[in-house]
Length: 281
Ligand code: PSU
Ligand code: MN
Image (cartoon, rainbow, N blue to C red; front, side, top):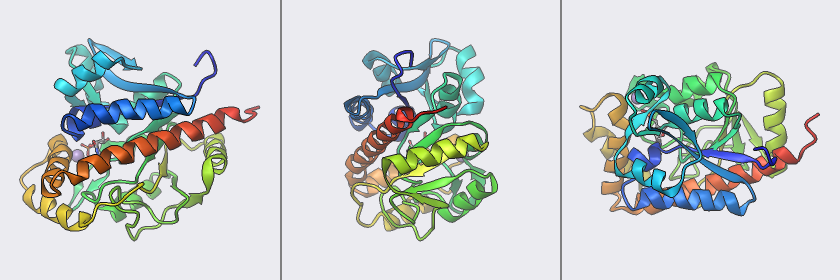
């Protein structure tokens, strides 16, 4: 940051809980590489040894991969106090990134409101309402109720920018049937929209990027996974659903998942470069 290089934060709940080995570490390493290739600085975020960490080494990533607790915003205090190895969700990563002055982060998909369980709403949405970080993602997985999730983001006044698209992507699919709030075309247009939004009091922003490839039958597989996890609640639900989608798709969802996250990381780095290239006075 001192050198004026744009920093892109990465969440680690995808490494600790979202993806199984070896896909989890591959996703983390390839995201970091993609960000570096754009001339930006990756900073994976976690809670380790009682400290908030912005920027991890490979050994740290391996610790997260080999056994960590899922840490959302409200879990930060207990995780620090207990010196837990904490893998941060989008919400916790945003909070920590903002504390370090980092405004860009990438992930696969944001959390949201669960299908058939509108009372189960990810803390990612509330964090977006209050923390000034742009979250680059492929929308949200169709394990969620995308329509309700977007309604909630509108209520919370969180901009949802479609990156070259009018439709909100559904992670494994370019189509969701739901419109984004506004469309941006290309790196400069996106960077200007972010700057103008932050200048006018906006805090969190969702930049929704269509996936580079699609998973056939994603909707069907998701329906089954949702049906089979009715007994699961709380923070276990998202990891359980993701694991079941992976099983039911014969592992096809996993490689695509890595490609999606890496693509989002690359776009985040490109937009961060453009943003820091502007005359910010
Ligand atoms: N969506 C994915 N993969 C993930 C997650 C979401 O496709 O790994 C993770 C992110 O870290 C997100 C979290 O912030 O799940 C949301 O969990 P919850 O619904 O418990 O807030
Ligand atoms: Mn939840």
